[in-house]
Length: 256
Ligand SMILES: NC(=O)c1ccc[n+]([C@@H]2O[C@H](COP(=O)([O-])OP(=O)(O)OC[C@H]3O[C@@H](n4cnc5c(N)ncnc54)[C@H](OP(=O)(O)O)[C@@H]3O)[C@@H](O)[C@H]2O)c1
Image (tube, rainbow, N blue to C red; front, side, top):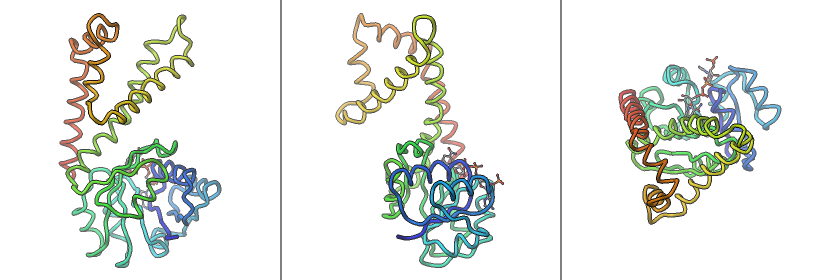
């Protein structure tokens, strides 16, 4: 199997590698040495090999994942020597293919991917641009690869990788709002998560109708669901979510 190497062994490398190994990925994985606590942990428990420096990762891998923070990405890449048959996989948010290309040799294959931390639970919907068979196969080991052929779609889709994080805050609000003497915390947690998972699964299975149509089919006149939904809409509860998405969309486009 072809070797994949990670430059930058932070949170993303940790959850992605744990996810793909749990999902059955058996190919060799090389790691850069910086952040040696994470690298050693992955080497010991997830069958990875720590290299002496970044260049050794590149020299011994066919696919190289750049997983530093955005501010470190281009400078890190510019210090490395690649060869023509390699693929650079960037998981770095807000840095487009053209910017990446400016830091690496002409002709290098470049793919962007956006795995989220549910990779660790084998459930990351990972957006990929452009399509690449190895990259899709790799991220299918920790969830579902979703390939797009337009970078604009990738950028807009990256906003949803941040919305993913906001869901946790919403879940926490709902747990706090419903737990108490009438509902123990552990039951509240199980129900909030179960309802969220159930809603997502029904929406995914109902290709012919939109989530809004599912909601209005449940929240019919006289129901408790409608009572609550009407209050949320009267108080413009969804408006800040739209605004937060627009803010990130602008920010990601500005960096691109
Ligand atoms: N975490 C997420 O949920 C998530 C989701 C989607 C995409 N992403 C993207 O993934 C990238 C990594 O995110 P992260 O959360 O994993 O960040 P992180 O936890 O801060 O990890 C980045 C790692 O890169 C290391 N690094 C910096 N410069 C380096 C260099 N020249 N050579 C080798 N390693 C270097 C850092 O070391 P030091 O700490 O010593 O600087 C750090 O260990 C970001 O660009 C982000 O946009 C993250």
